[in-house]
Length: 424
View (cartoon, helix red, strand yellow):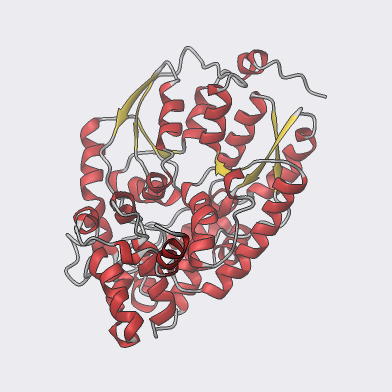
């Protein structure tokens, strides 16, 4: 095969590779939406099959593509590496004529809503839990009355960090940058505090990105693309400063935030991140690599005893990084590890909050909920905050990030000594 033939073939393959679909339909078999919603045409038909028609005539676009979770399970199983989820999301961005409504903008603008809610968190949390308020939001905004909202914190993680932790971080001999995300900043600062605890114990100081914005996943799913791209550009500027100028790895505690920055920025927002992509990773991957290479050790308490089930978030499965979180959990001597079958929880960020999607969301997650309840565990572990919300609401079981479990089980002083942490 000469060079001209190779160049010709490359020029006739699109970025999302839809031409390589062999119509095996394995994507449809693994799609969590297809079995519960007959209105969704399925990933093969909505993705590569539909793309062939849409490229000829845009009126072939089907608004039923909105039912796609963008879970990427179709891409995980595709033998031809077709970016099926990207094809569907790109089609929604390009062809849908329905503008995002007030509900979609409220759900997607996590920074704005979080900043406002944390100012009066007790009032907001109490109000959102009232049945009359839920019924009003159901009737006027289309946010399902059965959905439980995550609580807002009275103090943002960034506020706590600046007051309580920042000055001490420069004393550690090694540094890492932290993309905390909206969940840690507005809803659950304790996860960020737990990360600081763990990383400090192994001799790493934490630096925050100076002007971090929402990763953009909620804006992408609600087709607020200009806003998502604006925030993405700001995030990449800060990440480049950390990686290229300060020689730091950027770690996160959210599988979805990390996945969005690494893969959705170039695929859906046309933001080139090739120069920094490999230095953006989950904290569990970074920590595991330190331990595996002999650069860090973890020492755990003798009295920690818990039976813990691990749920793999869909975006974690797409990243291929489940092994890092589960391996770290298995290092805890007193932890009885219970693997769960691979199932989507069904919430998909803002998807499961919407009235038209709520029943499907719960039907998708039911096999997972039933398995969790049948395992009689003390705790469920997962790396995705929205999976946490869905599982806690639907099973009543507590859910924690692996980093928080490690922090809880860790013997801090013994770990410091094992890593010879000598502060400057």
